Amino acid sequence: MGLSLATAEKWVERWELQQQRYAVDREDRFTVIADVVEHITAGRTDRPLILDLGCGPGSLAARLARRLPDADMVAVDRDPLLLELARTHHADAARYVEAVIGEDGWTQALGLDRPLDAAVSTTALHYLSADALHRVYGHLAVLLRTGGVLVNGDHLPQDDAVLAEVAGCVGRRRAERQRALAHEDWGSWWAAVGEDPELADLLAERRSRQPSTGTVGGAARLALSDHVRLMRRAGFERVGVVWQYGDSHVVVAIR
View 1 (cartoon, one colour):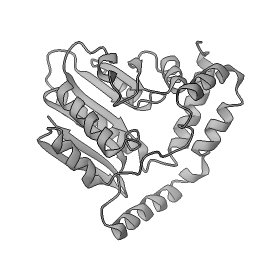
View 2: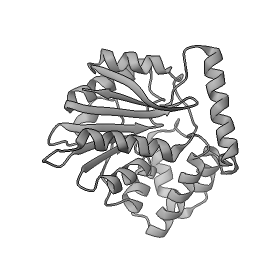
View 3: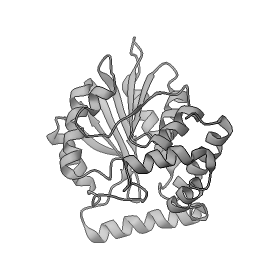
View 4: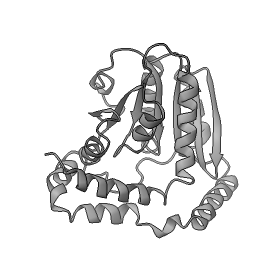
């Protein structure tokens, strides 16, 4: 079921553009995540081991691989189509694993041979419920070495409704100034994918495994304070925000 490189390049490039509609200062957020991981892994004598959660078509994994060429990367996602795009377009960036984050056996499916130095995610964990997210953060606390780091970049609203609206407005105005809203949206991207015959088998497999994932969203989005609380409950001693623009945050939790 392999794809041609040309097809993978086409759809990954279009993915990168449509994602700019949703992630304020997306490239800066990627850079901050890489800064944190590089800082935490500096001075390691062995190869750092990094886990990318909800990797999609490999956007973050590819950037981390370029920044940290001596690291070993494992990237996990539940979507067979996005994973095939990653395997084809970013083949050397990571070892890709198909698993449903948080479900029974997902950590065993990763095939890790040593503790993680870092676990990273960007705009991928917000679909999880509070209970599921607590389990996942708990699993990651076990998988990470002492001193290892969990870095989550996502849109995380404030508790206060008025402040949340103000932060959302700041993000929207930034996106307008950057002309990010001119790009196709999530729904249009998937509709176009459905018209590519080379992706037909992967799209059918995706629909059979996860029929409800064709739209943005999922569980009600948890607030920033909820994530911080759940990380602390899971066993992370130091938790805090290291970057923010509007409601887009990079949250760091150190084991």
